[in-house]
Amino acid sequence: MRIGAIVGRALAIAGTVAALSFAFAAAGSAAAKDIALTFYYPISVGGPIPKIIDGYVAAFEKENPGVTIKPIYAGAYDDALIKTLTAFKSGTSPDIAVLLTTDLFTLIDQNVIEPIGPLLKTAADRAWLASFYPVFMDNSRADGQTWSIPFQRSTILVYWNKAAFAAAGLDPDKAPSTWDDMVADGQKLTRRDAGGQVSQWGIEIPSTSGPQWMLQGMTLANNVRLANQAGTQTYFDKPAVIEALQFWVDLSRKYRIEPPGTIGWGTTPQDFFERKTAMMWQSSGNLTNVRTNAGFPFGVGMVPAHSTRGSPTGGGNFYLFKNMTAEQRDAALKFVEWMTTPERAADWSIATGYIAVRPDAWQTPAMQKYLAGFPDAAVARDELRYAAAELSTHDDARVGKALDDNIQAALIGAKTSAQAMKDAQAQAARILRPYQ
Image (cartoon, rainbow, N blue to C red; front, side, top):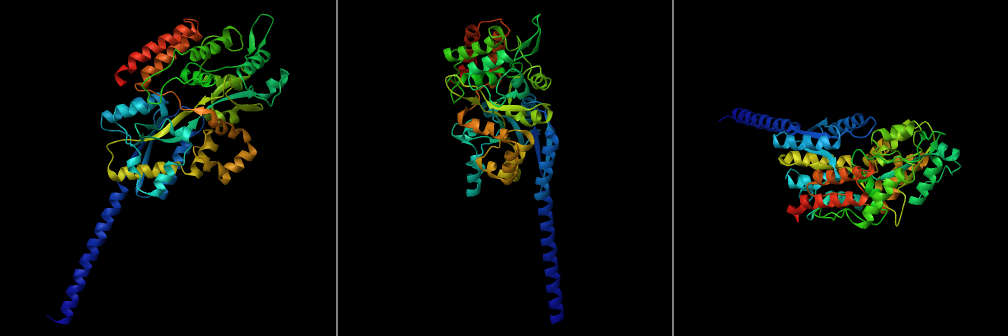
């Protein structure tokens, strides 16, 4: 064969190989761009949350052009859980979801989530998992595995109207630090006319949606927990639990500083803004909402102590769901890691009021600047030293409903506190028997 022909054939083969290599590379690129993830997010706290989430997703996609993420705003936490489980059973499960930390045992029992540990491949991955506040991880672990990642986490805070405090002769810069302080302050803050009509209550503690969380602010302050770590046994009828519930009942019936009956979760901040109550218990996740909408100077304090100080943690974690491909799992984990970097955790906390979930987030320049102008933002973080994991059990929805219903029965006077907690414990024991 002539040299020219040999060279020509070699060039032709090289061209074919190059073309095939380009085709394979293009195919690989196309496949990478086919990594699509669905992300369920609950909307349950005021503020422009969807815009913030959409912005994060767009930024992640820009940095990771091979991945697309579709946020689906699934309603309140309970709605999001129901939609998630329904979608999983129908074969259209989300890949990532933010759900309540207390949903952990339910999701494990339904066999729908992936443990995080086996997905970690590098030392950096493992360092990331170790970077969160330990108390936030208490609701993330079970059976020796980590199942979820802290994201929008909270504690209970006491918000107070400083102008109302000053008008009542109280120190406007001092939060009530004990149950007795809260009662004494509340009595001075409650305003009644000659006919007994109340124009301003001393305190409002919401009780229509998940009152068990607020009760835990009192039980932990009374040095008692409502369940074991394994989620298989509850302690609702312990004397210290009954005492805590009775204190809550007494706020309206004995001390007359709180509206009688039950109080709406969503209406409590509005009552605070409209000066219908001088103090309220609310999630730290509402901090930015209060800062934006309160037309008066306000303070932020920790849950008042009794025999000790304490607050339950609350809020939502990231969960990763089964039935993803290996590529999807890698991308989903990368997104969760990206969403919980120190810088992102700080930004999320500043934008929403949720607690930045890792200590190094509080050292970022953005957070340091924010705290310099708004030091109250650190109160919930500082409360973590007294905090404990929120009540979480197997069959959590049924156990929680039994507790909530009986708390409300006591608050409206249908049952004594002792009977309510005895009934709640009996119902919970029946529900949890299969898990013991």
